[in-house]
Length: 127
Image (tube, rainbow, N blue to C red):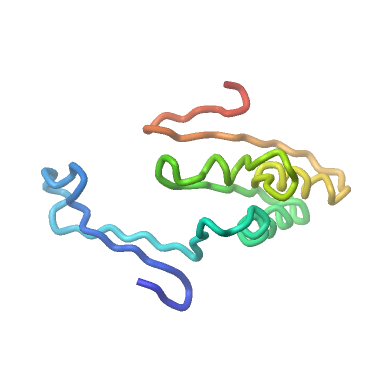
């Protein structure tokens, strides 16, 4: 379902192995997205829309910011976060770090990079 403010996906919840759970019977799952990026979108376009305003607010107002990349295996989450070595293809992490330190303010930066995979949390900074 598409609308003025985003995209909503609806599906019967009792699928994919959940059909035997009585709590799932007759239930509908719904997900809402403000925007979905296709395979032709550039790293710059994704960063400018999703992250640049968050990083700017975090630096200017001393706020916390969280970026969550969600999707199925093979959907491109790692590429979106890390990208490639050349500047045009750098991902969210590299762009955010550059933006924070380009502000030339006296800031304290604390960062965590976590991965949730098969219901386990992995710290990507400390292995």
